[in-house]
Length: 139
Image 1 (tube, one colour):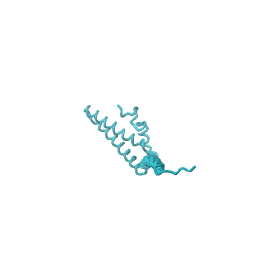
Image 2 (image 1 turned 45 degrees about the vertical axis):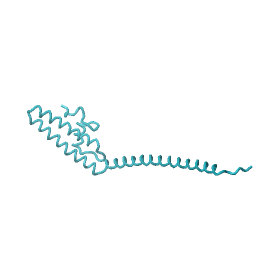
Image 3 (image 1 turned 180 degrees about the vertical axis):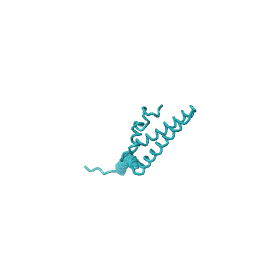
Image 4 (image 1 turned 60 degrees about the vertical axis):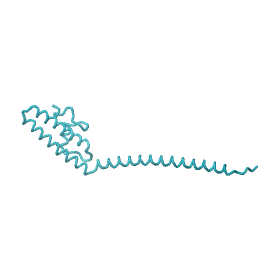
C-alpha cells in the first residue's frame, strides 16, 4: 500500500542528508589540513637536508674549520707566553670553546673528506661532534 510522504518527512530526511554531508565535509577538511601540515613539515625537513648538504654550506664549514684551527693555535701560543694564572685559565677555556666549534663543524662535513692535516686534527681532538675527553685541550 502506498503511503505518501508528508512535507515534514521529506524535510527530516533532507536535513539528515545535509547534516551527514556537512559532517563528511568537515572530516575531509580536517584530515586535509593535517595532511597539509604533515607534507609541509616533510618538505621543510627535506629542504633543510638539501641546504646542509649543499656545496656552499660545505665550503663554509671547511673555511670555518681552517680559521678556527688557526685560532686554536694562536690561543695556544698566547697560553705559553703568559705567566698570569688567571689569564692562562681564561685562555684555556677560550681554546676549549673554539676547539668545540671546530669539532661541531667537522661533524657536519659530508661529501669530500677534510684535508689530511685537518682530518688528523679532528681525529686527535674530536669525538661525536664535541671535544674528545682525551684531547690535550682538557688540561
